[in-house]
Length: 215
Image (cartoon, rainbow, N blue to C red):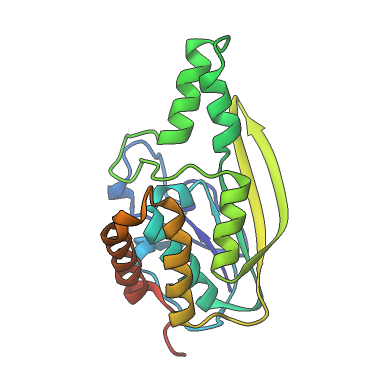
């Protein structure tokens, strides 16, 4: 079984295409989804999924929630399972914004690409990803990047990573420890330990919803 999360109007044959119901969209003309659902409420049996694919969806999740989803998706995936993620290329897109010779139009499109289109409650980006950050994040939660590709479309720049599930699945406890270690990188100073505790609690709350169920 293969999942296409946040499919929008792009139907992928051979996948279960999942997206919000039409009532959550304001400009989408049609729904092609096989299943209407909130991605944060999904859970599947352990090792029951062969591939999880999402294009321009992952950046919509707050950082601790994104960590929780990676750990949960790992628990869903079968041995040798694949995670396929595409996100805006923060570094290259920020370069367009910072280039004094870029037109206002190009800078505005780049701003939207990094921060979201804002036409719906979910149309906001919570994180900017570089290749280094995304690979480090994937590794923390039991994935190994196999292929990294960069692409562009009409003045927008993107990073696509295809990662494989590591041979040994990390336990729930190991994933939470990895979350704490990874998120500690975002602390400005050690005095912010309470902030880290809040992030880990956000992570824990999401894993309660999405960690693999028993078959």
